[in-house]
Image 1 (cartoon, helix red, strand yellow):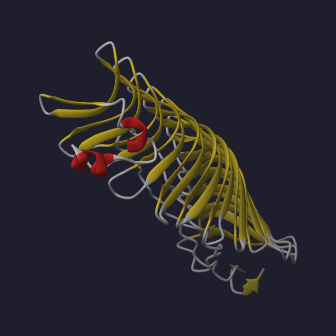
Image 2 (cartoon, one colour):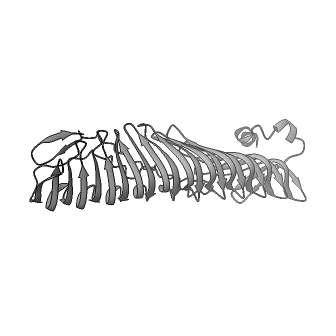
Image 3 (tube, rainbow, N blue to C red):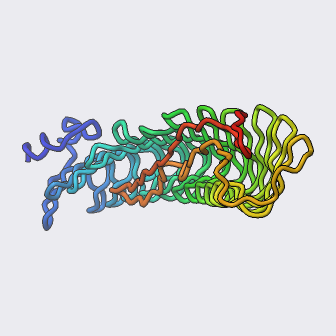
Length: 343
């Protein structure tokens, strides 16, 4: 008996206080040492079975009050109990060393709480019935997100800052940027619509003072758009997969302009090139005078770290995925019939 007491006694159970009023009971594979009332565990006590034990308060044969519980899978809980359930404030340690400290309801995280897994993940904020839900702050090795969550994922408005300097401010749906948002990084800024983490819809993109405003599809310029260069040159027309395609008009700062067809970013097919209001050419065939554009950063999946929690009493499931790529813009220039013009 004394070995049992010495092994399991803790801050919640005082042997000196118990020794004159406790009983020692063995039943099946469980051992109990503590107070009883009407043949039920009631008051202070210790119960153990294999690698499991609980030391703390009992009421009407259930864990009720304050106590410490260690489970056979290596997890443990220190805090408040109601009718054998984690209820109120408590700290839960997982077998991998991560922990949750906060409020519980029916053994589910509910209310405010902190989850931390080493230096990899830290979340502080609201929980609802075991999942991240409400407002909170999520930190990982690659980003910090502050905003709204729903059903364990980023949903609603949020601000996410990445370690590479990129920052997104806007709406999220199921963990990804979707709706209106602003994306800012070194040398570029995009403001407009997103879908599934990609630039999608109408938006304005500025890269080293070169502006594009128009339609995007799956992170690329697609549809009608307008581009402007710092020199004053500008283009109005259609794009396909990030390059000029179809009808478009190019105006240079010296007053010359081209109106006509484009293919793979080049003047090709029927069109008219004017210089000082004088028609120079009307047909282009595989035009060698390419008008090169700045390289637009492909920022697919700018969002990071879904924190969908499939949480039970002893498990937290967290997925993390970030993919951001910012390539340096190319030198911007415009080429016409026989000359090269830097914009």
